Length: 538
Image (tube, rainbow, N blue to C red):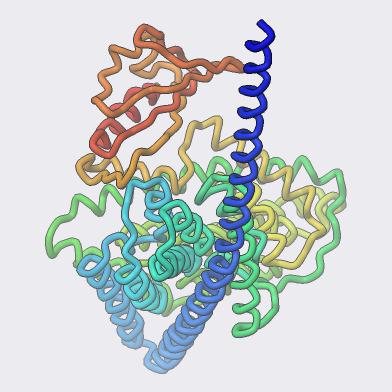
């Protein structure tokens, strides 16, 4: 017995030593990964900042040429509109043809494609995406389409991360981290907003708060912002007056602004998806005719008012300064709304960040002016609502409230509206969630993935979480009866505070969250999971 006790102590000591050695080795591995990761992230930030700055310069030149053309064409009042119309047609058509021919994944903002890459659902070929996005984006936005440069800059930043990771031959996990860091760096450089770039990576792109991801994104965004400020100037993106903090009594009106933003955000999301589906039905050469038609209408609108075409920066600044009369605002809002969903529906290279901000500024200014006429003592500065409206509308559509709030604060350089921002963004978020509307990038990703299940390609096994909605086909069925293919394994169920490993006879209940491991050969099972977990619309 004495020998047995002694042997057991030796075994326990050996096990403790092994555990300590394992922890030491893990710490060394983490330090080594950090030592490698941060210089690489800094290089990604530097290159992404350069790409974003050159893209901004190219777009500034294209905008100046378009505005000069419109101004020159007005010397021919009866037929001068022909020039901006043909310019818009050329820009839209060339952009779409370039995207379709060389890099279809470069269409739109590119953010859903980047999310699919980070979830191992798509591949990223930076050699195609980077040049096509740059040139096609310049053509589309320079031609006047109501699109923004921020989405393309995010995708190009991710492509820069992919290029550097392949050049340095890093492991797959580090490669995805560098891609995410490049995306954040792109947003930081586009808006001169480094914190927004970091938060956008954590809240929307990667959705991973691992220290490596945070550290890499933070460093890349900071360096990209420095590069952008050196090349493009250190001023906020929007120049607005120094508005004072609104009175506390105006907070209910800001809440009302959030509610309206939530409702109109849902309308925007569903209109955008509906327009894309409508354009998809047009086949062959007729699709290019539709694209040219959209470009022509945008060009015609620009001939009457250059301020309402392009990304909408001038329109947003005018609204932020309060220099629009009330009866004009709904007209501008409707025109910009229709132009944005039509421009994005063409499949040209361009995002929706800037157009959303312009629409939000118009919405906020309209409500602010109405409230000012009713209660001038409570709302002394109507234009403050334009600032808050940008964040609220962005939150309702993208469903990234932290990014929206920090983005507006960094872009305007104004911290006085923090409480109204929180109130309006919360209400906008709550309304969109209550209406069960998917965030726009998630909806676009779903549309892309499930339009044709055969296009889903996994390079390695993937872990995904699904929420079982009320009335979903899976509710009340046992795991063995879900019809999941081999290689698609349900490994965990979460029901409230209870977490357990399911068996073949476990019954799926509403509001339960399930975790599924999906092998590459079982990628088609994503369609079954998505349809089985989604509740029936009433």
